[in-house]
Amino acid sequence: MPQLAWQKSTFSEPGSDTCVEVALDPTGRLRLRESDTPSRVIVTTSAALGCLLRAVADGAVGAGWR
Image 1 (cartoon, rainbow, N blue to C red):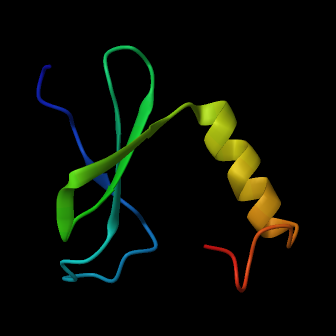
Image 2: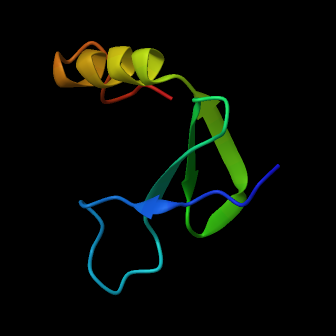
């Protein structure tokens, strides 16, 4: 697989080494990882990630969910 261009979340603290990073792979899927464990990667689509973020924003996913 070609080298991915990982981008740090804009919500990450400047100078922090623990942040969420995202990259778009050659197939158009999103890859998410935490910078402190870069070998652990979640692969998803923008549609699925959008559904998750909307559910979190609506309170459908929150405290006590794991």
